[in-house]
Length: 278
Figure 1 (cartoon, helix red, strand yellow):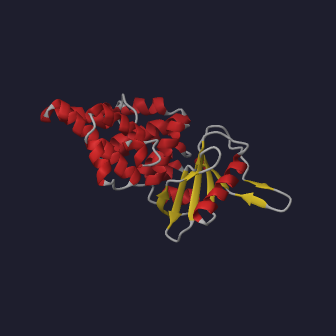
Figure 2 (cartoon, helix red, strand yellow):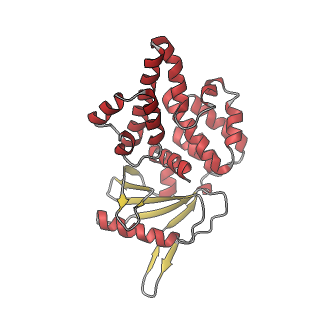
């Protein structure tokens, strides 16, 4: 699930509250990057914090896991150890098969539980009707009354976005659509939209780089491509991690076009700034 996982995390972290609040019951104001130091390194998919200090832990699942309760109990214990607080926990299921995961575990003198939600419980048509692009993109995984019409509406919303965000959103949509076997439908509908033609042959960050090549011809092809690639990497990192330290920007600015493309691809899976810059 690595590619799906990265794309879904990216979309969920951008949600200002709408769909995420419906999923979790919380309005997250910041996200933590956290690894748990155990015998085998374990990383929580998403750990957010609300304005009142409530921690929200979300695990993303594309397949049923019989051991989910044990995993969630381990995450809860590690979060308590690191933060001194127990989190609210949600397992967000995005798979195609029917949901069949436990919602807790119990012993002779104790019990432990968490929420489990199938993302198809969300009304995708309502998400598409909203003005937020992230709601529109994540709707591809929700319950849809007309998949073809939904794809058309989502693509129309993406086409109206700024070039950099348009490329990123289209890449996220393609990756998530793979979980519903809708990628061919998206490619077919996108071919009918001239503004999306340049991003049809690429995944993740290729669209914006291709656009950068065209702009680069007017400024000097080689340097124009490198500047476009740098702009894309910085935009993606600012969106994912917030304002970058000056040292990180300086290091990226010294890289070649080829290296910048590699860094751009890393952004979707990176857990922190160092994973991209180093």
